[in-house]
Length: 614
Image (cartoon, rainbow, N blue to C red; front, side, top):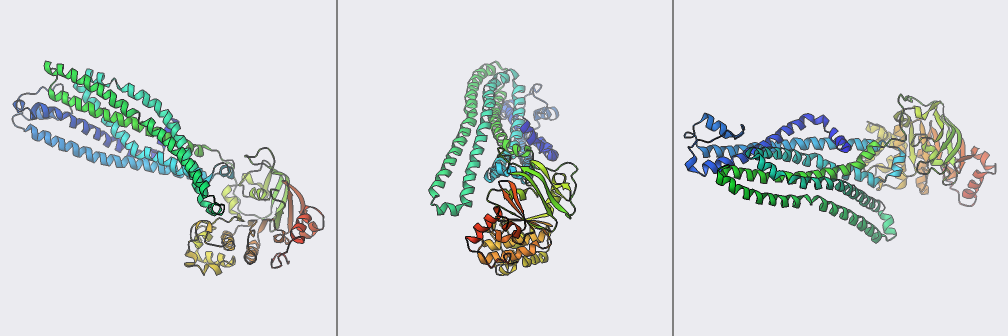
C-alpha cells in the first residue's frame, strides 16, 4: 500500500483533471444503468400494446427513472411511449460515449503526466548518484528500470486507471439497479462474489513477485544485449557469436517462463467468475418462474434485473484483471523506488560554502580510502600531499598503486574514508559540489564523446557557448584542421562514443572541451596512452596549451610525459613511496629509477616527444 500511495502522490498536481474524470466516469456508469432500466417499459409497454394506456405503478421505481416524469407530467394517452424510449436509448448512448471519451482522455493525461514526472525524478536521482552506485548497478539494469519498469507503471496509471474508474462506477450503478428491483434476490445473486474476490486478492501477491522476477529477467536480457552490441568487435574477433546467442536465448527463456507464469495466474479469475455466474443464472431462472406467475415481478422487471446482473459480472471480471495489473505495476515499482530511496554516499552538507576561486593549494591530510565494495583493505593509506596553485604534479607508479583513485578524490567522485582533502584550507566536504567540480576539468584515457555533432561535444564544456568560442577552443586544441575536412564541419555527427574519429582526434576534442570550460584545476589521466607517434605529438602540443596557467595533476604510466613536472609523486600499494623532481628521483635509486630504467633503458625512447626535450 505504501508503494501505491507513493505512485498516487505523483497525481496530486493533476487533481482537478482527475476529479473531472471521476465525475465523467460516474456519468458513464449512470448512463449504463439508465439504459438497462429502459428494458422495463420496452417489455411491459412497448412490446405489450394493450398496456400502453393503462396506469403504471411507479412507486417502486427510483426517482432517476425517466418514467416517473413521463407519467407524472404527461398523460399516457398523449405521449408515445416508444418514441420516448427510443429517444432515451439514443440519449443514454450519446452521453455515455461522450463522457467515456472525455473521461478516458483526462485519466490518461493524469496517468501519463504522473509517470513522466516519476521517470524524471528517477533519472535525476540516478544521474546525481555517486560512483559507488554505478559500480554496484550495471548500465543495462538501470536502463531497464527507467524504461521497462516504468512502462508497467505507466500502463497501470493511465489506461488501466481509466478502466478502473469506468468499471467501478458501472458496477455501482448496475448494483443499484438490481438492488432496487429485488434486493433479496440481488443479495442472493451476489453471494458468489467472495468466492471470486478472495482467491483474486491472494493471487495478487504472487503476481507481484512474478512481475518482479520477470522485470529482473528483462534487465538481464538488456544487459546481454547492451554488452554484445557495445563489444561487437570483441565478439567477432573471438568468434563468440554462438556463445552470445546462447546467453541471449537463456535469458529470453527465463523471461518467457515468468511471463507465462503471470498469464496463468491472472487468468484464473475469469473461469471462476464464469462458473459462478452460470450457477447464478440457473437459480435465477428457477426463481423467476414462480415470481412472474404470482405477479410479484413483471416480465420487463425480471428481464431488466437479469440483464443488469449479466452486465454486473463484466465489471467484476474486469476489476479482478485490473487488480492484477496494478499488482504487476507495484512489483515493477519496487526497483524504481529503491533508486529513489538510495542514500547518496557523496552528498552536499547543509549550508555548504561556495568555492568562488582557487588560489593557494590542494592539500591531502593523512588520507585513507577504501572502496565500499572492497572493505577488506585500504586502497590509499596515510597520503600527505600538497599541490600548490600553478604546479604540475605527476602521479606515477605500478598498475593498481592508487593513482587514478587519488585523483578521483579531488572532484569528490568518492569521499575519503579517513583524513581530509582541503582546497584553499576548506574541506571538500564543506563545499558545494557543483561549485567544486566547476573548478576542475578532466581529460581521461577513455574519452567519452556523445553521439552528437562536433560542435555540441566541444560546447559541452560551457553552457550557452558561442560558436566563436567553440571554434577558438578547437583551434587551440589543434582540432580545427581535421574538423574542417569533415562533411559538415562542426555540424558532423561523430557516432556513438566518437566511433567515426581516430583516438588522437577524440582526445583533441576532449582537450577542446576542457579548454572551453577553462577550469583552474586540470586532471590528466593517461591522456596520451594508446596513441600512435604522430597523434601523440599533436595531443601533447594541445595539452601544453591546456596546461598553461593551470594547476595540473598528471597520471601517467609513460614517464616521458612527466619529465617536466614540478613534482613527481611515486605511489606504491596505496602509499607515497617517493616525491621529487625527475632528476632527483632518477639518481635516488628507488622505485622511480627502476620504472625509468624499465621503460627507457630497455626500450626505445620517443625523441619526438616535446616533453622529452625540456
